[in-house]
Image 1 (cartoon, one colour):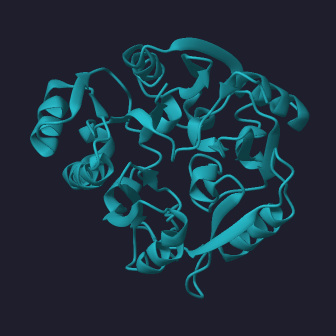
Image 2 (cartoon, rainbow, N blue to C red):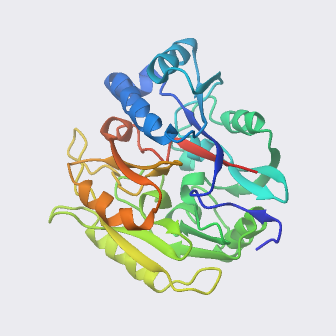
Image 3 (tube, one colour):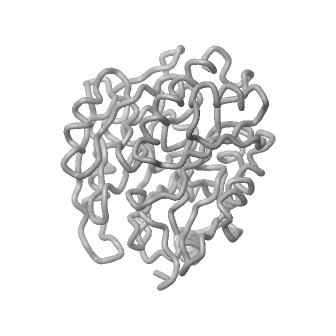
Length: 333
């Protein structure tokens, strides 16, 4: 790991957390207003304790909606974007000495699936608002594909970063080299695949999260109809055999999954209790299927000084993700 470059763990103090307000009626359709209500609920929990929130709004209507829903105390800016997934379209922020660095990977619409006007620009707007120095990286990657421990380790998936729709022709070792060079990393832990129905091709923030250095949460199947049961067990085995940048074996914390969460056609959606966000007072966990209480109980001992809070996410999920997917952390310098 670089002596001067670090992506902090998300329990570290954050100067701001950025998000993009649901704006596109043609994308969200009947879920637009319910998704906005879910945004307001989880963002208010995230903001407790004085966390600065920066909400980007793509239109005058979205700006008015965000201001009405959130009230005073948040910053709302007019900036264009395609949709709300700021974890992926925004930069990955790193600290280098006393400088904030906005690392920008190449973004290709999640393997060419969704090419939306504005999604190439919003990362620049977030970086500019943060006052960060830009660093452009020749690798197709999204923030949701990377989970950092704050001590030089990242977890990612082969399904995403080694996918022919992202980085054709690049070997695993070459991808590792580019990640390590860009972000000051020492260790890349590879998982094979993510959730069934995940349009991002296996983003790690739905399947494995560092609670703290050396401690990783992953899910265990809930119900006999859980479509990801075998995937959860494979993830656990891979994590149990891994070592981090400090040479430590990882302690696993297994939390219950939401079980089967189906769309209108009965197909599994990529619902995950892992897609939490961390504020100074609350860890806000997406809730589905009434199974989140066991998650809060399992995680509570590991987030000393913070409360565990559940917030509904089913309408945000209709767009393809949840709370972590729609936020971009700007660490305090």
